[in-house]
Length: 486
Image (cartoon, rainbow, N blue to C red; front, side, top):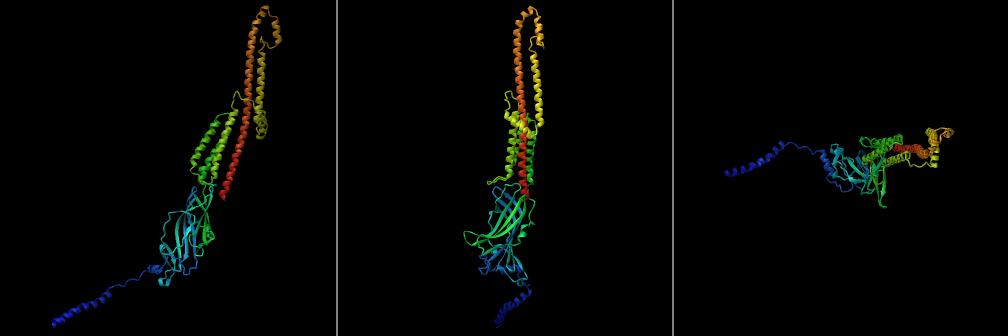
């Protein structure tokens, strides 16, 4: 009996220890803290959330998406490819009817951030997108207890833009950013503006204003459009208006060209009969050609049109060529040549009479006339001297020579026959010399006439050239001033 009772007692000992251990363990364990509010709310919102459908309880309810943007920087403007690269801060918010809660049940929490991949997001895209930029990824959105979802993210936008470079470097560009739902109709997703249009228009609070381009304003407009009479789509257009800062291009492109043109005008004051003017203008033309080669990479290039500054450079080059041609013509006229013909009468009438009155060059004409009269007087004196030397005996009065000859002896008369032949030879040589001098004087008169024509024509062409350069400069300056103040 004793062994049996001992065995039963030993069998009851483990059961007694088992009954005692739960109480002991309960008293020694610390109470576990409750689950964090953010985790509980996130689990409550996303446990049975379906992001594959539009978040409305009634399918007839339209989801209104309010959007807004702020331009942060103008990164690049590619005129050749017609691409504008900007960096914007984009904001949008909408109401999700399945993301609502009572703040009293969640420790008065009214706002929470949720992963953007876990909820429904509207398919709002930019129609002008041409390439995916290097935009940072923002993985979260803010959700309020009313179900309002705010999606804030920076975007590097590479969009197609019709760039007009005709007024370069004083050009103003207007590029549009069109936000629209790529799939949903306006009865499903409608767009609106987050802020007032006036606030969006002149908002430069985050714009980096130290680059080549200056932000003027941002216009916004809502419109509906349809494709082939199908359902309408809602779109929000933002017009980003920017203006180029022209100081760099004015200093590096316009001023050197203006200086070269001024030196070309100053070169007209060099004497036309010297060869220095031709070499000077050739040097200017070569220098301008090198200048155009250097600045060719700076000018914007498009297949549509040419900027006005490119036309300006071409016209300046043409003016330099015309100036060089005019100089060569004047040098050709005033250069002394022995076989140069006489000045035609119509040229004398137009240039030496009419043009001198028009150009007010009376002093030069009087100088040329006085010089011509003095040369005529000297020529008459030379003719008289040569006639006096033709007398056989060297006498000034022929009667004296006759009386002296009458009193000569018969021996002297016999030798007169032999001296007469020698005298006739001297007469022929003197006549030839006289003809040569007259011919030379005639050539001098012709050269003097052409020199006078060259001077008058040089003044006429210079004033015409100067008037053309001034008219061209005033026209371009007026256009660029209007574009600059626009």
